Length: 89
Image (tube, rainbow, N blue to C red; front, side):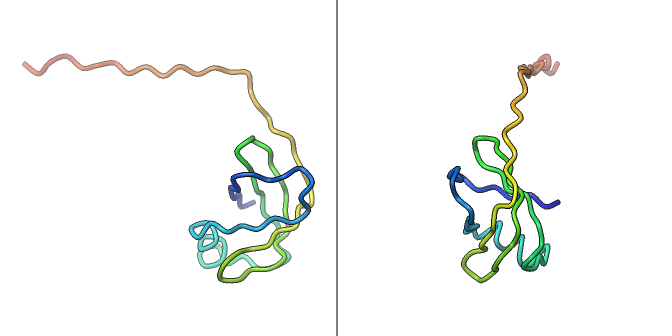
């Protein structure tokens, strides 16, 4: 299933608009998705939504939320370290 990012989705919203031009181009022109197809949408809080495409036009795509999934925050901490190379002799 194709996933798209929306900055913020209000908890009581039933329909949302995807307005980002890059994501809109990807949905419409690259993936060639059509109305009545299903996509996954996620927000900055980590929530995921299953949504049906209602309408696609040149400025926005209108999506109807069908299912809400709570965020799956893992209690794992990751530490990244980089080893510095020795000087070139």
